[in-house]
Image (cartoon, rainbow, N blue to C red; front, side, top):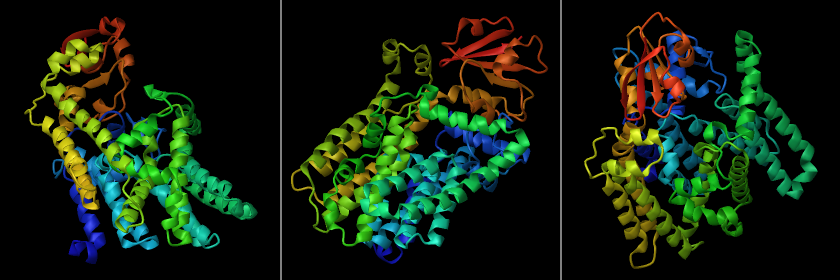
Length: 552
């Protein structure tokens, strides 16, 4: 074992996290919608000097609270973004907070694992989280969820600590603060997950029914304190913009739970598949203790068993809740990543200490899912290098146009997926019993493969999907013009054109006979003819699935 791992474990995980999460933060433009949405709100905070309000297009944006956006605004200012003295890219600055949150998550998981189990368990928990694909990707993104998940997890953890000490006030207060901050990050789902976990624990433990009054009292006080964080900000916003903003916010939350919003109505099993593939390879062996409690006989203390129960409840509450709601997006089940990595570490720790065995179906699962995943990694660059052969096979006119983008492929990108397949075969399928060193070798290989993919392939994918319009927006920065999209939702024109003030939307400008400055419209090539042939606009060009028009 590395000397630094033994003597300075926190420094070790800080360095490893920085090495994995930070290097390629600026490799591609921010992606529409979410990444650009949050970064644009942070930019508008800086531009207007109004750090209390969350805005989009310089109008109140009530869908998200401000905490993560404050962190992005702070990052933009630290790196000098949007000034002539900027010392890194806007994309790097927008994603940097999540890299720090990812590093903090590794340190926290190591600490909790070491405190309540063993140093080995702490290291394996952090390593499991680092090796899973989607936590890795999101820690290098500008998405809210990594912060949201960490705050909810810490709220539940401190609730558990309080329960062990007969509902100690200090731990309850810390739990309330973390849940309150989570409410200020993404909204009331934080309190819902926290409360459902606590109530599920009580329901599944009949011995706790006699203490139901104590439970309800503790949960009520935590909820009140946490909600104060939420209503303190929304109350101020309501005074500024009117109470309608609060009703709009809750209507939006209800719509997400009850309808397939934004085309994200997926089947019930969607999130189970997302976790199986997205948290590869740890998802393969973490399944067993998530389903069965047999392995808990290996845990030495009641606290260890109790934590295991709480984390299992957290996993299943989140998975079932977001499998039931109508809107299904990849990161909705992301709260499962932390308990999933815990049970991965449990399996690996038991195996290393001789308390568990490596099951044959683990190896089969790694080979089947891993090779399928490797095929997908290779298929994307293959399609890129043979795009004109695939265009006739695609029915979607817009995607056909996207694939005509002049993206350069060296031809070597396909080797990333092939290399991952060879690594899986080498570590899992070669002769001899599967050892822990072979599994750790596979996990390290996966980390390296994802880093390569994010550096070399993801920017090329972005080259097809949005680089064409972003180049156009950036070419107009500083000019006194209007740029608006028509027929599709986007935030990219706000951020990459660096819009300076509010203006009418595209449909409104389209209907105006005379405008006070040059006005450009962006549409997709599958837009309705009524928009495409509107009498107030002149066609400029079609490029890679996008249509460019100018107001007459």
